[in-house]
Amino acid sequence: MDSTPQPQNPKPEIDLVMFDLGRVLLRIADDWDHAALLANLPELAGLTGDLSTKAARGSHHPLAELFDHFETGKVTVVEFFATAAKLADVKVDEVRRVTEAVLIEAFPGAIALLDRLSLEPVKVGCLSNTNAHHWQMFTSREHAAYLPIELFDYPLGSQIVGLAKPDPAIYQYVEDGTEIPPANILFFDDLQENIDAALARGWQAELVSRDTDNPIPAVIAKLEAYGVL
Image (cartoon, rainbow, N blue to C red; front, side, top):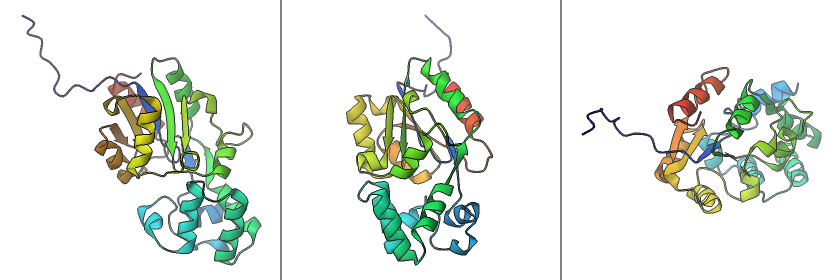
């Protein structure tokens, strides 16, 4: 009889790793104020709150609702810029500049991590609340935030799916599209509400700390702990 001690609550085999993008693989502005400063438009600071917080998403302010519609593909890039400029009483080009300033760069080591995962017997995807303009930017080789889209087996953005985290339906979309059991999906995100929604679906999920200059080493450590790397 094998008397070797068995680990308590062993981690399940992971067949799919899903990443959020902003603050997980990509460095982004902290909020609209920060993006306005990066765009050299300090006078636009204060138009809205953190673009990723639940408070902003839950707000009934027309500008906040517009961001939600932009992220779920209900308005085009041109419509978003024009409507946001009107609501904020600023120029269309100023909205474009601030929007583009949100994306800063890929975290050092992010592409190398995706390359490394491509050699492992695991599928990789992204599940991000984003928009068509940012999607075009980070898939452009010329941009500092470039990530090779071909390294994702399942490149899913909210504007493509028509749903946004933490809506349970977007997690269901992943499960249906991949046919991978929830317990075999590992998800990385920087927002607790999105992690909680994934856990409620039965996924494995790890919160990525915002209190670090580069989360990639911590993500790698988690992947190693799960036996993915």
